[in-house]
Amino acid sequence: MLTVSQFALDENASFEGILGSGTTKAMMERFKRGKIREKRRKEREMERRLKAEDAAVGKMSKINRDRDHEISEIVALCTYHDKVVA
Image 1: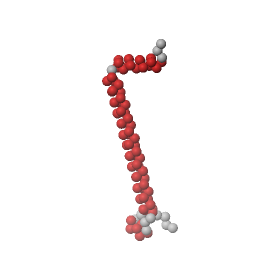
Image 2: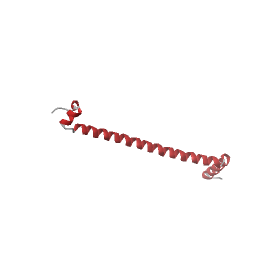
Image 3: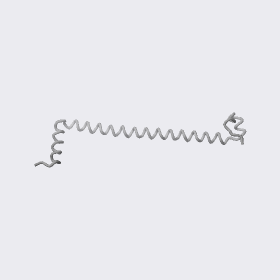
Image 4: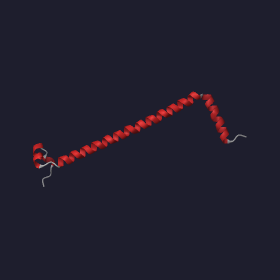
């Protein structure tokens, strides 16, 4: 009597024999391409997030810079409406 594992091995061997080894190679290549695509997608997502973070930091530095202008700079730059008179 064949055990379950022996049966599975025999079944896989006959399955590969029917399809041929080229199909197995094609499946492996497709799997590798899928992994490469997934890796590239993650890299693009990471780059997009870094760019968004850099933009947010740049915007905050601009806000801080505008807030820290002296009164003469405010008048010269006509940004008085952004300031709160204390």
